[in-house]
Each structure stands twice: as C-alpha cells, then as structure tokens.
Image (cartoon, rainbow, N blue to C red; front, side, top):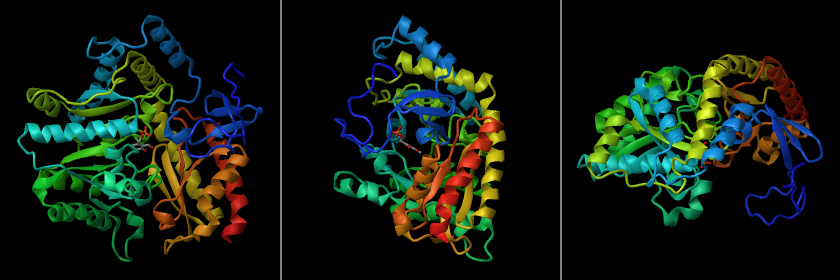
Length: 452
Ligand code: PLP
C-alpha cells in the first residue's frame, strides 16, 4: 500500500462529501482490467469505472509519457504559451475528424465541460452568422449529458434536473429512439423514422428560428444502456437539422475514443455531426481530459467574429494532453479500436446467449464494447420488473460480491426497467471476456430466484 492509505477506510465516515460510498472498499492498485482493494481482494472491472479506463490500469507507456512530460513542464497557461502535447493532440484529432470535416479541437477537463464548450461554440457560431434568435438545444429523454448546470439543462432525467430547474433554462426534449417498443406490425426502420420525426415536430413546435442545435449520444450510455438506432435514424436526423438550420452535436463522451469499434462513433454512419464532445476514454482515466472537436469553418467564423469566448484554467494543459497523446498511441499502435469491434461482437453474442438462461434480460444493446442490457418482467411486452426488487443495484451488487464490476442504472423511476453497461477496456482479451461472462452468469444466477 502506498503512503496515501486513508485514515477513513471501509464503513468509516469520510471528510469528503459526495454520493455516499462509505461501504465501498479502498482501491489501492490497478493492472489492466483488474483493481485490488486494501484487503487484497481482486475485482474484474468490466465497467471501466464510468466507461473511462479504456486501455486498462497502469499502462506503462502512458505512465512513462506522463513522467517525461512532468520532468519537462506540468503546466503552461494557454494565454501565455503554446505547448507541444496540446498542439499535437489537436492535430491527431483533426486527422481523425478530417473525413467528417471536424478539424479543430478545444481541450477541457471532462465530459460536462466538453458539452458546455460545445453549447457555447454553437451559440457563438449562430451569433457570428447573424442568427442570434437561435438559442434552444433539443435533446432526448432519457439522456445524460453532464452535471454542470448548462449540461444538466440538456440531460434528460427529471430526477436530476428538477431540484435545480428554477436556476436554469431546461431545454426541450424528444423521446429517445427505443425502437424495440414499436407497435406490432411496424418495422424497425419505420419506428426509427417516427422517432426522428419527433425532432422535426419539436423544432416546429418551438419555432425553427429559435432552435440552435440538437444533441444526442450516437450510442447511448448511462441513461439508455447502449441504445443504438437503425441507420436511417442518423441520416434522417441530419436531414431535419439541415432543413431547419440546426447544428448537430454528438455527445461521444462515453461512446467515443474507440469504444464503439471506430475511433469516432460518428464514423459508423455517413451523416456528419457539426460538433463532437469527447472525454472519458480520451485520456482513459490517467488524467482528467475532455475535448470539443468541431467543423473548421465554424471555428473560423467564430474567430472572425472576435474569437471563442470560453475557456478554463486547465484547458489544453501539457500534462493532460501528453497523457491523451500516449493513450492515443496505445490505441492506434496496439490495434485496440479493431479489438473493441472484434471483442465487442463476441461479448454481445455471449450476452445475447444469456437471454436464453435468464428470461428477465429484456434487450441486449450497443456496438463494439459500448454494450448494455436491461431487465424486464416481460421481455416481449416490455413490462419492467417491480421497482421494489431493485434489480439494478441487486444484480450489480451480486456481481460485485463475486468480484465483477458492471455499471447499473435506473432511469425515469424504472419506467423502462433497470439497465446495465458491460464495457470492459478496449484491450480486453478472449480469456478476460470468458471471465466476465462467467462471473456475470453467476451474478445473474444469484438474482434469478427473486425475478421468478
Ligand atoms: N456526456 C455523457 C454522454 C456522459 O456519459 C457523461 C458522463 O458520464 C458526461 C457527458 C459528463 O462527463 P463528466 O462526468 O466527465 O463531466
């Protein structure tokens, strides 16, 4: 154990304040997909925390790159100096975004900040174009876009935003495309187009000249457990945005940085977003880092109108960007994006296999290693398990007790059942996939009698 062993261990009060975590053990070491606690217990982290540690723990190449950067300089303020790591990481993101026209990057320290940066860029672009009447941003319900007040106004979770509603301007919402809940006889594509149409209806309802943008996660995370729509949805949403002069923002904070099996999740479809918010896997938990990747011409227009009026103390810090660059090198040189696609297909098939053993699994969703499933009393009729069963926390805890970490969430008061994300690191091996599926089967088995 290192010198930071806390005075307050498991089940002891803490001087820190946050969501209560007193009953959690103290993490002391990480290696690849594993975390050890202070009692020597090993956990398989098939969640990557909140889908963050995308190349696993203690990657020596990243640690050494950070050490080398720290030996040179940890911090240089962007208003006073350029720095190599930030410039190079922006170039690398611009190369990756080139085909989508996304060639300029802004750096910040996390996902909420990236969403805030995207919102403010969108608004400043509208002002630069003389479209100051546009300020509303439509998002989806349910959804999660962050916890700062601007991002929270987009987050589609009333339980989260309601306490703060008087302090913000809650933005309009349309239903997230749960095509699995379509009426009998409607095709998946027809359902997807119906969900896309809800965007156009809402734009008209709000008054098109007041609407600035639409934001969505191309593959849903915390709020929707791997929700992905048929391809037609993405194309139609783009058409609708174009028709009414809206910008399209993809929130790839969770599904980006290679997790979906493409570096940018947007690469799965021909339609191009105007702005992408990134974080989590960008520096994979080694340091806080987020980014806004945007269309070059938008940024030029904002510059011409006086500059991008936004920033944080830690924007584009050399240490964070050096870590991000090293993570990018590991991802690219070790072929981890392709591995995410390959292992993701294997894991998805295994999760679908578990549906035969456990009838309470409702739907398996997602792509690459951005995978989730929900639990239902009736899979076909989409009737959730009774909320008092607490299936989400019970199953996640059963897995935890067996040494497997998965991510669970209940949204909209369990209206759609609880859901889970199974999102191991992108360098997960065949053997580790087998281990995850075995432990998950045991955890689900522990819960099964309660669902019967
Ligand atoms: N957007 C999405 C899609 C997220 O999943 C998250 C975090 O889970 C955020 C934004 C907010 O990121 P952060 O917690 O780094 O502020």
